[in-house]
Length: 304
Image 1 (spheres, rainbow, N blue to C red):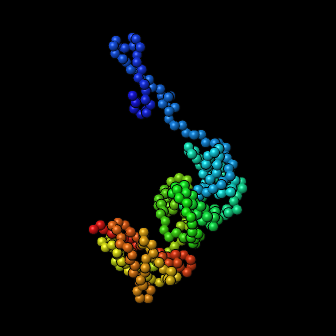
Image 2 (tube, one colour):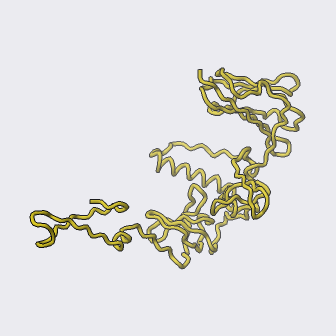
Image 3 (cartoon, rainbow, N blue to C red):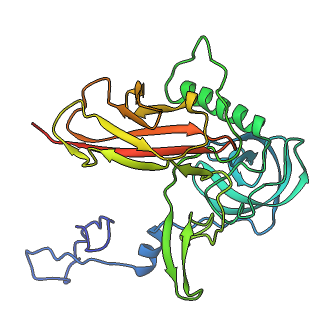
């Protein structure tokens, strides 16, 4: 028999002589609140004293990876090759989690973060690492995932592509919240610890781009019925490297751009038919100051 709220199966207990009416078995159930509490999963006690660990790897999310008592420890704020003092913040069956309290021996690749919000904002995790080493770490993560998850080992790996170290993102998903205590609206990424919106004034990595000065788009209506929709976009004054102007359709890559007149209007369309659903075309060009201009146009293709 299983009691409500408990998964323990209790064996029936037959009453002895005189414990019930003759010829009939009486079952009594004994339930102990203490035993039920003991059956619940106990929380593991975390070490009170900090641990001194040697970091030997970097996880995919930018945390240092160390080993303690034959168990992996993911350490926020630590880099490979460093010896750090760590406070354990969580424990799982196969791994522990912690945060860096002190860097005892720093990596030669550790650099000061450029963004003033780094550490509080959860948008970035590797600004403390030299940019070249960031690329090497991501390259290594790709190799590990191919072997561990994909069960394949490539014969040849191309050299990683690289671009500007700052301002390389052209879009970002931000949180917006009115904070009563500050009496204003905050726009930014979530904080590293918790669900609060980070109080940010700038985005060094994520957003350092400008919108293309679009004067007109025809047709503007994003809902279309044809599989090869075409738009004509007219631009205003723009100081950019127009020979590097490019447009990309999601799932198709770069598509041809046809200019009309004095490089003020261009037309663009997907090369392959678009299926029913949502699609997007993005156009971009580098400015003379190193920042990128961009324009994004959605298409919602109706089902036939």
